[in-house]
Image 1 (cartoon, rainbow, N blue to C red):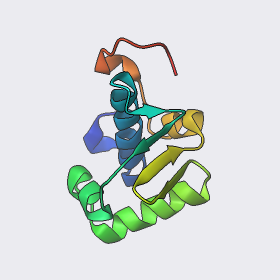
Image 2 (image 1 turned 180 degrees about the vertical axis):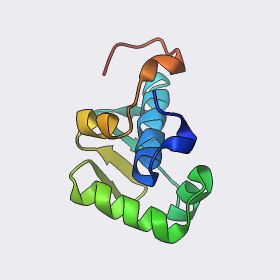
Image 3 (image 1 turned 60 degrees about the vertical axis):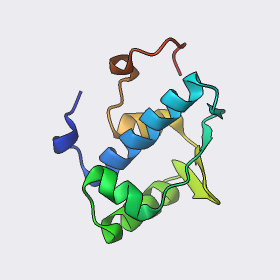
Image 4 (image 1 turned 45 degrees about the horizontal axis):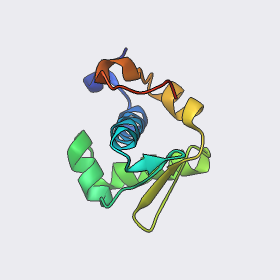
Length: 101
């Protein structure tokens, strides 16, 4: 697993989206790879140490790659396997009681 500081900006944001999905799914606030994400691009940038401009580019790239759809406060991970692959996501570190995605 790649440490957060060594991830590209795209991988860092992708990892955040994957982690949030699994945590929200466990508590019943997400399903079908979709969840409410009432954050701004600035919030995502602050969480990942990225500028608003950089986050904007990353989100555009993730959308154009067909990995996510983010609108009206909701995020849909449209290609879980590829998004998880992009960020080398390993959910086992979360120690969540759930089945594999």
